[in-house]
Image (cartoon, rainbow, N blue to C red; front, side):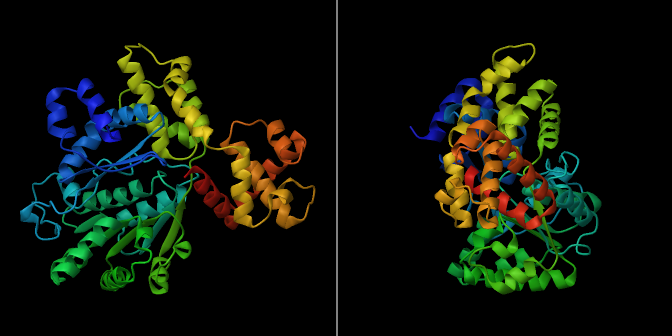
Length: 447
């Protein structure tokens, strides 16, 4: 029995039969990545996906996480080749009926109506991206075009992109927006090539006021499709049509990408979304719990936030687990002890994969220094900085004490480790290049 079949077996036992038959059974498993704990589910209509995300995502995520014994990130994609006939050959952006609701309009444009600025939690880690996205939502095609949002997995890049689209629809219901993932863009172009008919593709991607493409890094190495995107860019941006891209890395770091395209990516504004700091993680948990009408005690919120630091989806998964645990066990109130019990497997799994030795190895390879140099007493800058960065990451990403970390760095005293951690913490706020290097290392270690 594969992973999704195990999930279905559990879901059918805890859900209402009519809900399971109508919504869950119609989902297909596109991919289960056991290593990164990501589950991609598909449905042929965006309307159904929106309903499932709104009403059943918590249950699906909780069940998947319990079976995997780790916080599972669940995402939903529209399955290819099954677009409604009336929407045309490539799922052309439909004409909006004036009486259509904002939710239906958003869904028709590929937007998730629930992802708005109102339910996005802003903090120092995402403030610039948040403000820039708001500006674009109110003044599309004028301020920052294109807007290039980059950062690690599950940090809110896609949420901000959808929020811009929803804000544009709110301001002007007649605006023509298309929001797609890069894979959809690739599939549409492949269809055009196979059928030797580019007219539907050009109409879909050029007859717009705004085009949003998620995870643009997946275009790497696909030169013909990159050329087509370049042509679309030249059709839209010079005429005041807004474009937004999201990526897992800065535009200049994209691999196998045409230099002309990179130049276009960086011609507007590039903003980074970083992992949220403690206070923002707590605020996210509190806002998400409020949306689910659940009373989350402050001590539990801080407990989860201190132990799960990598991304927002991980926090949501943990929150869903404690909510489900509380409701399924008929507990009147969630206590810190009950939260520990509910999250025991996830907390162990989140730290088990990362050891001091693994961090040392990744950092040494990244900076091209040897492990022997990492352990040595030398204070040469090209060795000392990587060593301090490794100490900092060990403190942030493992449960090891300062004394334990020092022991593994050539039997150094815990005060030496503390000094190194503080130095990198301070430098990271001032040195953009250093901050980016650490961010890359964090993503390498967590993924």
